[in-house]
Length: 189
Image (cartoon, rainbow, N blue to C red; front, side, top):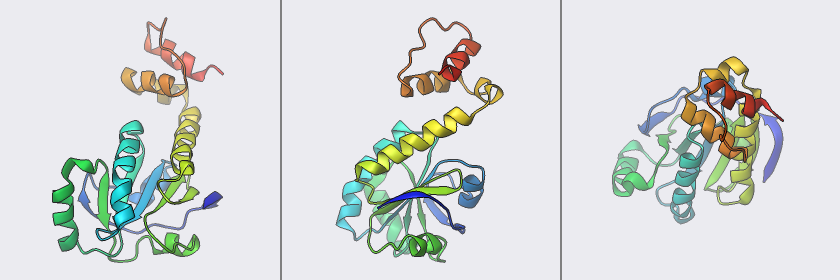
Protein backbone atom coordinates (compact mmCIF):
# COMPACT_ATOMS: atom_id res chain seq x y z
CA UNK A 1 0.00 0.00 0.00
CA UNK A 2 1.45 3.34 -1.00
CA UNK A 3 0.52 6.49 0.85
CA UNK A 4 0.02 10.06 -0.19
CA UNK A 5 2.45 11.87 2.11
CA UNK A 6 0.49 11.46 5.33
CA UNK A 7 1.85 13.12 8.49
CA UNK A 8 3.92 10.66 10.51
CA UNK A 9 2.65 9.92 14.01
CA UNK A 10 5.21 10.41 16.78
CA UNK A 11 7.69 7.56 17.15
CA UNK A 12 8.87 6.74 20.65
CA UNK A 13 12.21 5.49 21.92
CA UNK A 14 13.60 2.24 20.60
CA UNK A 15 16.18 -0.09 22.13
CA UNK A 16 18.98 -0.49 19.58
CA UNK A 17 20.80 -3.82 19.41
CA UNK A 18 22.77 -3.25 16.19
CA UNK A 19 24.19 -0.05 14.74
CA UNK A 20 24.44 3.40 16.23
CA UNK A 21 21.41 4.37 18.31
CA UNK A 22 19.45 7.37 17.02
CA UNK A 23 16.62 9.47 18.36
CA UNK A 24 14.19 8.50 15.62
CA UNK A 25 11.66 11.27 16.30
CA UNK A 26 14.42 13.89 16.32
CA UNK A 27 15.66 12.70 12.91
CA UNK A 28 12.09 12.75 11.55
CA UNK A 29 11.62 16.27 12.94
CA UNK A 30 14.80 17.36 11.11
CA UNK A 31 13.22 16.23 7.83
CA UNK A 32 15.65 13.35 7.32
CA UNK A 33 14.66 10.24 5.39
CA UNK A 34 13.98 7.44 7.86
CA UNK A 35 12.92 3.90 7.02
CA UNK A 36 11.28 1.74 9.67
CA UNK A 37 10.97 -1.89 8.66
CA UNK A 38 8.90 -4.09 10.95
CA UNK A 39 10.11 -7.68 11.20
CA UNK A 40 10.40 -10.67 13.53
CA UNK A 41 12.94 -13.45 13.93
CA UNK A 42 10.28 -16.11 13.27
CA UNK A 43 9.05 -14.50 10.01
CA UNK A 44 10.29 -16.26 6.84
CA UNK A 45 9.41 -13.39 4.44
CA UNK A 46 11.26 -11.02 6.80
CA UNK A 47 14.41 -13.12 6.41
CA UNK A 48 14.01 -12.94 2.62
CA UNK A 49 13.87 -9.13 2.66
CA UNK A 50 17.13 -8.71 4.65
CA UNK A 51 19.50 -8.76 1.62
CA UNK A 52 17.32 -6.23 -0.23
CA UNK A 53 17.13 -3.83 2.70
CA UNK A 54 20.88 -4.22 3.31
CA UNK A 55 21.55 -3.35 -0.33
CA UNK A 56 19.34 -0.26 -0.06
CA UNK A 57 21.29 0.87 3.01
CA UNK A 58 24.50 0.57 0.98
CA UNK A 59 22.94 2.42 -1.94
CA UNK A 60 21.55 5.20 0.30
CA UNK A 61 24.02 5.54 3.21
CA UNK A 62 22.50 8.84 4.41
CA UNK A 63 19.09 7.23 4.91
CA UNK A 64 18.44 5.98 8.42
CA UNK A 65 17.15 2.42 7.99
CA UNK A 66 15.99 0.63 11.12
CA UNK A 67 14.67 -2.90 11.34
CA UNK A 68 12.27 -2.93 14.29
CA UNK A 69 10.99 -6.06 16.00
CA UNK A 70 7.84 -5.53 18.01
CA UNK A 71 7.43 -9.17 19.01
CA UNK A 72 10.94 -10.34 19.93
CA UNK A 73 12.69 -9.70 23.22
CA UNK A 74 16.30 -8.48 23.22
CA UNK A 75 17.30 -11.93 24.52
CA UNK A 76 15.66 -13.57 21.49
CA UNK A 77 16.98 -11.00 19.02
CA UNK A 78 20.68 -11.03 20.04
CA UNK A 79 21.40 -14.65 18.93
CA UNK A 80 19.51 -13.98 15.68
CA UNK A 81 21.73 -10.94 15.01
CA UNK A 82 24.87 -12.94 15.83
CA UNK A 83 23.78 -15.67 13.42
CA UNK A 84 23.03 -13.19 10.61
CA UNK A 85 26.18 -11.13 11.24
CA UNK A 86 27.05 -8.81 8.36
CA UNK A 87 24.11 -10.07 6.30
CA UNK A 88 22.14 -7.35 8.10
CA UNK A 89 23.75 -4.04 7.13
CA UNK A 90 21.40 -1.62 8.88
CA UNK A 91 20.32 -0.71 12.40
CA UNK A 92 18.19 -3.15 14.38
CA UNK A 93 16.04 -2.21 17.35
CA UNK A 94 13.46 -3.82 19.57
CA UNK A 95 10.23 -2.06 20.46
CA UNK A 96 8.91 -3.47 23.70
CA UNK A 97 7.13 -0.26 24.72
CA UNK A 98 4.93 0.37 21.66
CA UNK A 99 7.07 3.14 20.15
CA UNK A 100 5.90 2.34 16.61
CA UNK A 101 2.33 1.34 17.53
CA UNK A 102 0.88 4.67 16.32
CA UNK A 103 2.38 3.99 12.86
CA UNK A 104 1.01 0.46 12.81
CA UNK A 105 -2.44 1.67 13.84
CA UNK A 106 -2.63 4.67 11.50
CA UNK A 107 -1.62 2.59 8.47
CA UNK A 108 -3.60 -0.52 9.46
CA UNK A 109 -0.60 -2.86 9.45
CA UNK A 110 -1.79 -6.46 9.50
CA UNK A 111 1.38 -8.38 8.71
CA UNK A 112 5.14 -8.30 8.43
CA UNK A 113 7.51 -7.50 6.93
CA UNK A 114 6.13 -3.99 6.60
CA UNK A 115 8.12 -0.87 5.83
CA UNK A 116 7.54 2.84 6.22
CA UNK A 117 9.50 5.49 4.34
CA UNK A 118 9.32 8.78 6.21
CA UNK A 119 10.55 11.99 4.63
CA UNK A 120 10.07 15.61 5.70
CA UNK A 121 7.95 14.36 8.62
CA UNK A 122 5.52 12.53 6.35
CA UNK A 123 5.05 8.87 5.53
CA UNK A 124 5.53 8.54 1.78
CA UNK A 125 5.42 4.73 1.65
CA UNK A 126 3.73 2.07 3.74
CA UNK A 127 3.89 -1.51 2.52
CA UNK A 128 5.99 -4.59 1.86
CA UNK A 129 9.73 -3.88 1.56
CA UNK A 130 10.05 -6.08 -1.53
CA UNK A 131 7.52 -4.06 -3.56
CA UNK A 132 9.04 -1.79 -6.24
CA UNK A 133 7.38 1.25 -4.66
CA UNK A 134 9.55 0.85 -1.55
CA UNK A 135 12.86 1.46 -3.29
CA UNK A 136 11.46 4.19 -5.57
CA UNK A 137 10.02 6.01 -2.52
CA UNK A 138 13.43 6.01 -0.86
CA UNK A 139 15.08 7.27 -4.05
CA UNK A 140 12.49 10.04 -4.48
CA UNK A 141 12.81 11.11 -0.84
CA UNK A 142 16.61 11.27 -1.10
CA UNK A 143 16.48 13.28 -4.33
CA UNK A 144 13.95 15.69 -2.87
CA UNK A 145 16.08 16.16 0.24
CA UNK A 146 19.24 16.70 -1.83
CA UNK A 147 17.48 19.31 -3.99
CA UNK A 148 16.41 21.18 -0.87
CA UNK A 149 20.01 21.64 0.31
CA UNK A 150 21.39 25.15 0.06
CA UNK A 151 24.67 25.92 -1.66
CA UNK A 152 26.25 26.35 1.78
CA UNK A 153 24.93 22.94 2.90
CA UNK A 154 26.34 21.32 -0.24
CA UNK A 155 29.73 23.00 0.15
CA UNK A 156 29.95 21.52 3.66
CA UNK A 157 29.65 17.97 2.28
CA UNK A 158 32.67 15.84 1.35
CA UNK A 159 33.67 15.74 -2.32
CA UNK A 160 32.92 11.99 -2.43
CA UNK A 161 29.31 12.67 -1.34
CA UNK A 162 28.89 15.38 -3.95
CA UNK A 163 30.19 13.05 -6.67
CA UNK A 164 27.79 10.33 -5.54
CA UNK A 165 24.91 12.81 -5.62
CA UNK A 166 25.86 13.73 -9.21
CA UNK A 167 25.95 10.04 -10.20
CA UNK A 168 22.55 9.52 -8.55
CA UNK A 169 21.21 12.34 -10.75
CA UNK A 170 22.75 10.76 -13.84
CA UNK A 171 25.33 13.54 -14.14
CA UNK A 172 29.10 13.34 -14.52
CA UNK A 173 31.74 15.08 -12.43
CA UNK A 174 33.86 15.49 -15.57
CA UNK A 175 35.25 18.99 -15.90
CA UNK A 176 34.80 19.76 -12.21
CA UNK A 177 38.02 21.04 -10.68
CA UNK A 178 36.83 22.79 -7.54
CA UNK A 179 34.24 21.67 -5.00
CA UNK A 180 32.12 24.62 -6.11
CA UNK A 181 32.06 23.17 -9.65
CA UNK A 182 30.43 20.01 -8.28
CA UNK A 183 27.89 22.09 -6.36
CA UNK A 184 27.08 24.20 -9.42
CA UNK A 185 26.48 21.03 -11.46
CA UNK A 186 24.20 19.69 -8.73
CA UNK A 187 22.21 22.96 -8.64
CA UNK A 188 21.89 23.13 -12.46
CA UNK A 189 18.54 21.96 -13.77
